Length: 302
Image 1 (cartoon, rainbow, N blue to C red):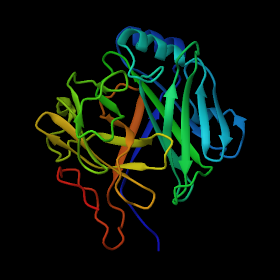
Image 2: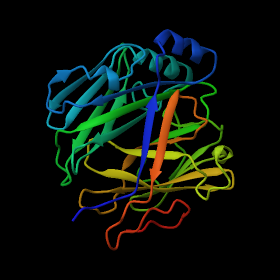
Image 3: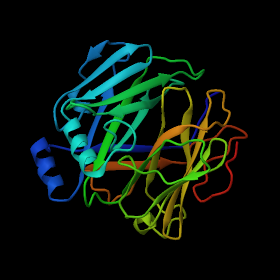
Image 4: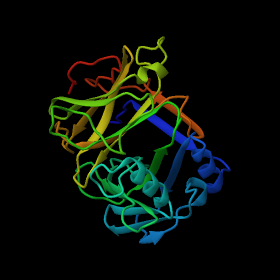
């Protein structure tokens, strides 16, 4: 039987913009640093991804496979951006911690990929992103995937992200350079039950479309860590001036479990160059499968 599901899609492009231009743009207090790549050689030891699907305004990109399903993506010289922000804003408990990373598996049936960590600490001038990929049973597997890195500057437009690194706490306010709310409000993560999280961006509802129940925009999540848990967005909603995203994290067998994750929220006003997104909700669903409900803030369905 063929299975269908609802999903969200994000595409970000920065066209014809050299590094010097991006640096000058950021220093003027506008925009965001962005880098990405498509790692499409899952069994190669070390290689340079295809340029047409790669952006690193600071240099080259390399991908290294150290063992089955274990990869390191290196954005050469992009660590200089990290060092500047962590020096100005402090760190969040992880070396070189700043910005936001999203990872998605591509065209590998049943596989999912997640961020195992990202870093540009010490004397390194590079940004490294560690990736783990798993099959449906939760075992490490070789897979193709994409990596997206964002680092906001002043006036980055409508953008919010968070690294949810305290999966067992009932409620907390994530801090440091891996949490960002362009509206200037707080970020609060609540944990009503096992594997279920509500991420609230205070005052970010000002970017939302009041004519839409969910407020519009786009939300993405990727699991974080070396374990085989996986997380997904089950909806997002506008409540007063706050924007809230619902996250479920599961084991490979489908059971709800507490887990760390990295979440990104964007709107059309996000100042990250050319970008596009879509929320696919009209696919046929198999029996007894309920679609996501962005307007619901109740306990998650299973």
